[in-house]
Amino acid sequence: MPKAVGIGGLFFRAANPAGLAEWYQKHLGIDDLHKSVWRQEAGMTIFGPFSKDTDYFGRAEQQWMVNFRVDDLDGLVASLTASGIAVETRNEWNSEVGRFARIHDPEGNPVELWEPAQD
Image 1 (cartoon, rainbow, N blue to C red):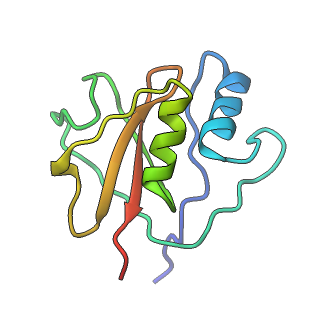
Image 2 (image 1 turned 90 degrees about the vertical axis):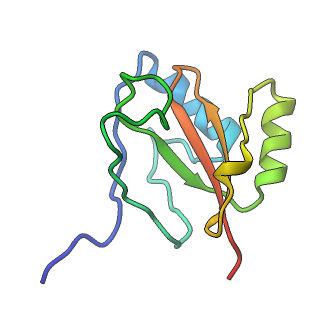
């Protein structure tokens, strides 16, 4: 059976698309999204619908949340904190699949950071 083999893109509206792309590049190391295609490292991707009543994303009107796999959660958290970005961590977010933290981009969108557990 033909099937989807990966995420081809994540598209969302922004009040300041260029500024938001720059923020993601500066703080999360994502290449300039307006000039090139971001080449990701191969790895796990979770595609997971949540209940419409979930409070996991934060605001009730928030319809999506992006989750980025990271290679050094502690190092990234330190870098983000040094840049004045609030980082939220909760012990209950950590599990057998790895460790998690959450930030919000300049437009208030939740961004989950995930360091997968080592096999």
